[in-house]
Image 1 (cartoon, rainbow, N blue to C red):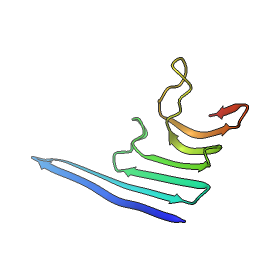
Image 2 (tube, rainbow, N blue to C red; image 1 turned 30 degrees about the horizontal axis):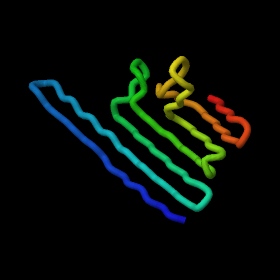
Image 3 (tube, rainbow, N blue to C red; image 1 turned 90 degrees about the horizontal axis):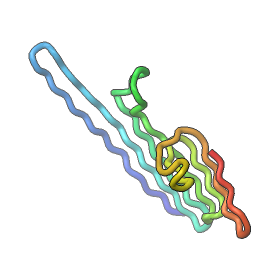
Image 4 (tube, rainbow, N blue to C red; image 1 turned 60 degrees about the horizontal axis):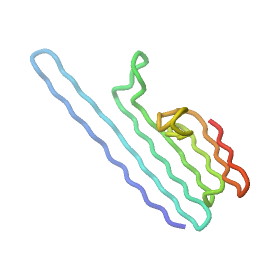
Amino acid sequence: MTFNGRLWNDYSGSDVDNSSLHSNTTNLHFNAYYDWIDIKAKFKKSSQENKFDQAKDRYSLDINLNDLFRINLGDFYPNFGNFMIKGNRVRGIGIQLNAEKFRFKFI
């Protein structure tokens, strides 16, 4: 089994007259590989998260079993073709089954 990952933080701040603006973002990417399973996890925590604005925080867990069965948890970008969801971010659960005779996708 092989593991790798990285952790980093971005911080910016400015003070002008009596106004100050500070921003902090922390990221974690983690991968685990074995001969029949791939696991990828990504977490992003931002100090700019606000309940009145679009979400800035992101998290995802992708579990892939030999390209036969795949589970996505959190934020992911499914593709159902040109006339449905095509690469738009979805927060939730995605299940994909690619059998020899049929294919099943669930969001």
